Image (tube, rainbow, N blue to C red; front, side):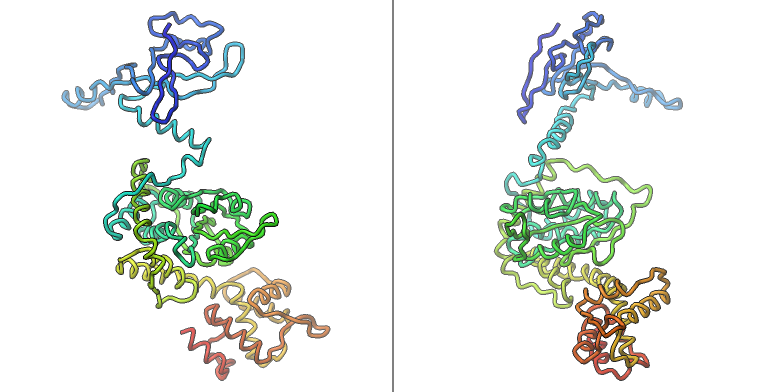
Length: 496
């Protein structure tokens, strides 16, 4: 019998050396009897060769690959080249003894010579599950990165290979990832909304976890999750929540800017910081937080190359380069005067924040604006086809027909007529329409026994036209009913 001993690796973990289980029972060696005893958890397992620890692997067996039937003598000889296999005692496994007690032991794992590093990584990943804070990718120092353009390209290449996304999408993800390192220097921390099938969405979140600033990957977006994060050290929250509530959408949108306080257990807290969220394969416009970049992905076709494994060293190297980039450019980002003036509304604010983080690189800033152009178009298209837009269009149709008072029920009927003409089967009642009018800022009031509605005086008409302009110009088209409406002429000119 061999004596039980241990050795310690670089992480301080102890490995049993030379063939015994962790409960003290010896592993049967090749020269020992294979007769099982009641105290041995391996009772009946048969003979085993002596294993070793990860530091000094011992040979186990020599295997030869079988040669194909039709090969040349030379290739057959090469295929029969000996592959040295070793046995390593390193991972603790559950085992039941002969008297049915549950215990643990460290059995010998077979692996090719040179597998010590791989086995240590496997052990470390298991330990990281039990102590997740130890696995969060953070810098170990700082490292030279070259130019902003060079760092951007390295980061984009790594994200592309990990998330398996098209080039334009990986570029947007790279701009957003860089911005997470400068949240304290920005006026807003743009969010990221991921709309994709589950597998593709998960790949994106995992790629972002490698390279974002102090990333925390969470299974649900709720106040409790936000409350338990350490906001004294600004983190990047990465949420997986296809069933996010409307209230939480509003909260995440507000928390992309400083100053919005949330009541948590009688105390007010500011949860400002970068946040990405996977929202599911399909999502309505009201489930996308404001001030967020939208990324939409389709299912990967069959035969797509799988995500390439990324070594810990590669992740660490990029984390350290991003740390140096932050240290050199935080003040420059804070003082940035970049302005994406060709974009409008929220998209412009998002572009200004992301563009400020690509320091001394006008080409990258121009690329960002060109990438966000279609995003803004999609945002406007989503808004123009939303229920709010159709409700405004229905109300304006009735107002342009000369009605000075409009009942909510009449608006609902017109909404259903427009929806049916566009191929929609869903029907909306007066209650839904009343909530929708209230949501866009048009409060109804009781109009006698007929019910609630709107009085179309100048203030209401002006507000309705302003809102229609925001929702893509719905109801402002130049037709026979509103051809002479001065408000329509004014707003349709602004929408063009």
